Image (cartoon, rainbow, N blue to C red; front, side, top):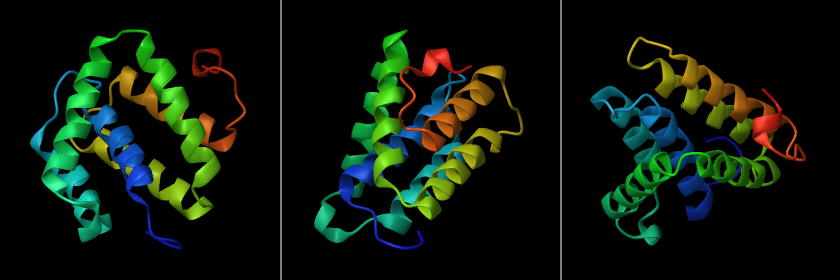
Length: 136
């Protein structure tokens, strides 16, 4: 990650975003999981604690969110707004690259995946957008 190191909360949000992309199609395949764990390990610092526990918690939160229906878009809106305000431009590019890499990992791009990537891009470009459901 270029520029500054990620803090634990930012790493959490970035991995949550990538994991959500992975799971939006209904399954979290091995290749997608590998991309997320590689990103985790590349950015993990020992003072953060246990990496496996951290990632397991993210995955559990993604599973819960996917079951929540429309609340999912409110959570995406909240997370991307915070990331848009706190990430450097190079970190925003890295996030989009990560999410896009996860999206393409299984060799299929579904409409839900393309829609989610578009939502991330638009919100990161303009964190003042009020509601992600209004920008499609």
